[in-house]
Image 1 (cartoon, helix red, strand yellow):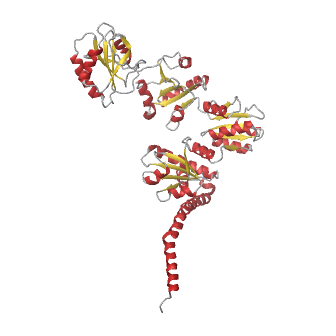
Image 2 (cartoon, rainbow, N blue to C red):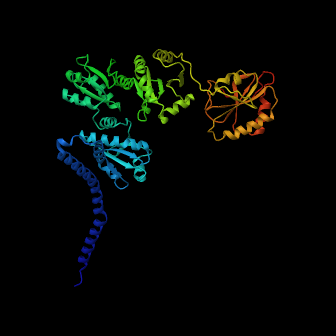
Image 3 (cartoon, rainbow, N blue to C red):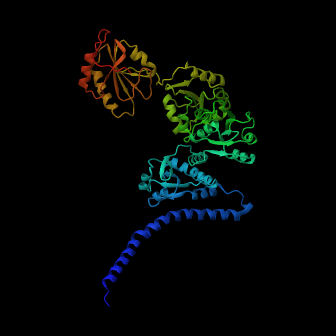
Length: 534
């Protein structure tokens, strides 16, 4: 029986709708379900973990460190090119770790990130903790804004902000809580205070009669702004005494608590956000900070601009620690004391290179980061000598250190100048001085050196002209400020304070013409060239 025209039209429409649904609607639903499947899978694994713990009962005791870490790592959702964007878009809060398998810092951070995830879960924070192998899934990593390793980003309703906290599990938890609506922990009982004290090694406490008023608002603002230190509040003095036993104020108090010899610091300024933040920033470090990869950026950016660095082996530092703490206590908030283990090449070598040192015994250096000067303590390390060194640093009477190679013995066609001989060889010399400033790692320096060697041979025997060179990587002088290499400077006999700078790409012919034009034959500067004061 032939189909009527209306019947055929109806079948065509029905088939089209079914085809459209199969091509577009059903796959879309399955993609959305993938996120739920990922999260449900996590919940299922964690439920299994909890069930196993219950079965173990009291006889099981504490979980092994490996099992704790394994459980923590399960909490962190693994993202890929397929699900990354959907997980970010479908969840209000996502803390994401971008890593690479070959990156050592990623390897160090991942277990801490997993531990932080476990703690945040226990606290009931509604944050999805996720990670992505940026090398395996470059498309998704690029889309999410991961440009280096490791990178931590917090996504709030799809918008990202860069992580700016510390890199221990506790610091990750603190930063995440602060950025997701819990800048302050409120303690209402002695038991909760005891439990808090066991979990945190440094924190800022505020005691208030009530959780309102201008002082409390300033405290809250400071808690939100400070990224690394946990803030805690109470309106019960007996609770506050659990954290700070010798608390003085009855109604209003702010203090910093640390687990070290100088355990308690009392805030004595006006209750303003800026003053509270300054108090925390100046007091949060120990008397002697041990430099690590994790805290190095915070040490370098500290507002305490006078810093004393002690370089020593771990065994030697252990013997010196009490002496260093004794002196550091006298200069608290004025000088930051930092210990660097000389065995940690990545931390110690950049500093020691600044001084040209490879020490076998403990050494003390200092930096005034306001003016960029560095200093070396050349006397024996005793409490009295160290205190004298620190006092002179604050009084600006400490001589700055300029590194230098040993004084050279040999004399050649081109004189070797070092930091210690720069005055005598260049600035106080009665001759015109043609000086090459170079470094061993400079690509263009070798060609320039060959040119100057030819130049020196050409002018050999001229009594009032000297050719010299200085290795700027090993030698310094306050009147030699050079940042580009090679640099060629011509010091005329009549005016050593204003050397003439030559273009480094000058030909041999250009250099010969330049010397002839600018030579001072009678102790009088004949140069008409433009001079660059260094």
